[in-house]
Image 1 (cartoon, rainbow, N blue to C red):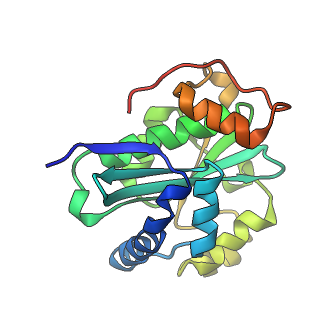
Image 2: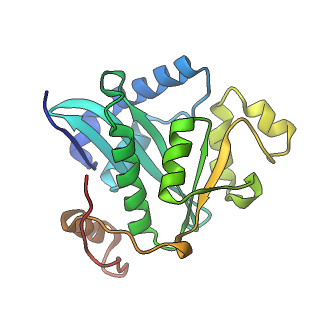
Length: 209
């Protein structure tokens, strides 16, 4: 059994996108819940822009998550967390969540990070990272975010309540309550190249992956 590597994705990982989309769709079907549908190009762009995290065992896909920004980058979500069935129960989801969260905090240090989830495991990880349960009104009012809910089978609940609540639990992380995040130097250098010199980043550091 090879060691599982969790890393910030890049364009070389685009070959895994179709497998990722299929794994997401199958997981949603098993849970009986909806999922915000994403295209191949959407996830590939996330990889190219250093806004995604992937887990691999050698060349085998093990897990994935990506980042989205809303409300002129005042709000951030870490989305689409998925672990392939062959690799579940090995702590991979937490490693992906931790790195995606750190990546989001590093790139948008002043943004509030939020989560809408119906999964108890994700709620537990969010709580450990410093998220708190909030009302839907505490989240972004960016219409582009809420349109992502239209693919969910429970969207009628969201409509009936005028977006006050739904099946998912809303959780929010406020960066003002915590110390700065740290990322490996090579990832910081890649982000600097993407963002350009006008976008200073937090101090360098390392994290355990």
